[in-house]
Each structure stands twice: as structure tokens, then as C-alpha cells.
Image (cartoon, rainbow, N blue to C red; front, side, top):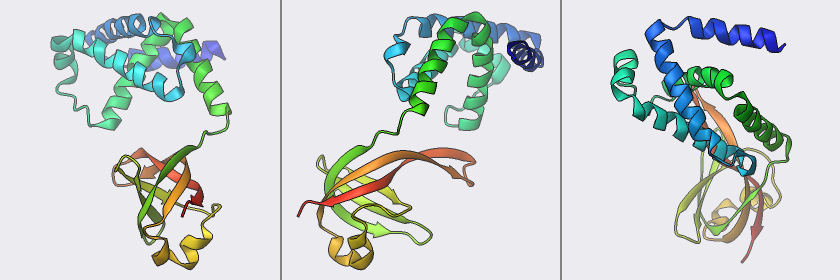
Length: 202
């Protein structure tokens, strides 16, 4: 299985022009050096993803002229292009610092296997909107507006169904879970918070 995986990676990488492959080698070396200095064992999955992205962008910043020549003005907001670049550099990194990447993979696997942790938000119900699915807007204790997805039954939802108008202005403690949804318009995934439980405080 490992041999087959290596062949797939090799085929993908050799499809790049030689100059681009040389640049990818440099970017992978710099990214490996960066991530090797981090304590990946004590990072969450989100922290790992952010750190890997930071290391890759830091590596790109070391070779601006070569990167410009091979890839042009890559827009950081183009998620699809950025993901593709990350995958290509990641393939090279798999050969250059496999031990570190295995640690990253182990931590990600452990995080995925563990039950999703629920975040608690305390605030005031500002509005309930939506047609296909509902969005509940909460103003939290810091004054920030939090838009939460209401996709399924949750404990405490009875009042939202039976008397939605009276719920507005109520102080609540909401347990939410971070979820991803796919946007056909953007052709990408976005993170949102889905309500799992609501407790009315007054």
C-alpha cells in the first residue's frame, strides 16, 4: 500500500514542469523546516491546519520571484487554487519530512475519532430567519453577533417552534457544534456553528 501511495505521489509530481518541481522542492524544504520546529503533538486539528498553512505561506514568501514566474499572481482568496498549491507542496513534504507529517496525521486522526466538543455561547436572541433552514442570530456577552444554524431538533427548540416571536429578546445559553457546509455558488466548504441545545436563562 505504501509503495502504491508513493507511485501515485510521484506521478502527480512529475506532471509538473521541471522548474516548478525545483521550486516545489525548495518550498517543501522550507515548510518542513518550519513545521518541524512546532510542537504538533499538543496542537488541535484547527491549530495544525493553521500552522501548516502559515509554514507554507512563509516558504512561498522566501522565493517571491521564482513563485511569480511559475504561478503568477496567485490570489490568497482563491481557495481552490490555494488548496491545490498546498496539496502539491504537501506531496513533496511527504518525502522530505515524513516523520513530522506522520505526527500531524496521527493528531488529526485522534481529533477526528474523538467526539465533537460543544462550544457554549451566552447571549440574547436577536432574530430567527430563513426559509429552507433557519438561522438564529444571538448577540453574545461581548456584543458580537453570532449566526447559528438550526438544522434539526435540539433540546429547548420547542419554544422556538411554538412561540418564535416571544423568544426574541430572551437571554439564552446555547451549545453549538462547528460544522462544515458546501456552497454550490462558491464551490467550496464553509465552517458554521450548528445549535445542539438551548437553555433559557430568563
